Amino acid sequence: MTGIEQLKEIRTQKGLTQQQLADQTGITLRTIQRIEKGEVKPSLHSLNAISRELEVDFGVVDAIEPKKPNEINIQIKITDMNQLFNDLKMLFKNNWKILLVIVLVIFFLTNYDAIKAGFIDGWNNK
Image 1 (cartoon, helix red, strand yellow):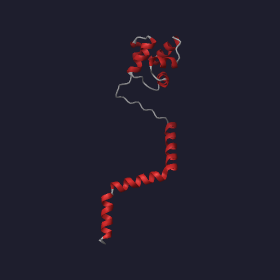
Image 2 (tube, rainbow, N blue to C red):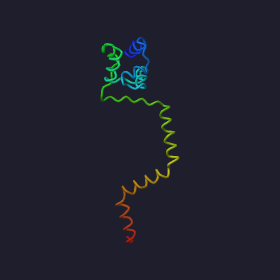
Image 3 (cartoon, rainbow, N blue to C red):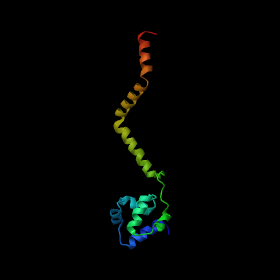
Image 4 (cartoon, rainbow, N blue to C red):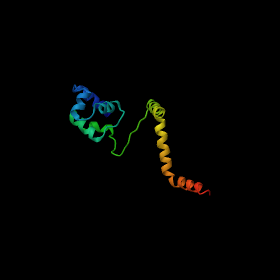
């Protein structure tokens, strides 16, 4: 049995719901749910708060392997990527004129000297 399963079992034995545990620990309900589903590794702060509230020895909770402070855990599902692409399509579809103006302004600002030199050369018939 993993540390996550042990925490969930202890929580249910104590008659606590996920919402009650979240309220008592100060951790969001969604975080509690994601920890119990194994979607995220809990931080040391979360582990301490949960183990303190459930009155569990930290050694039992230690099996979960908390994430390191500089560790980033990114999981992107295909459906999330599809939603992102759909959102970007709608953004471009609905705001293409504004985006075009922004791109042109950036282009002109970054190439101002070359554009200015071209106009001056053309004006002076070089």
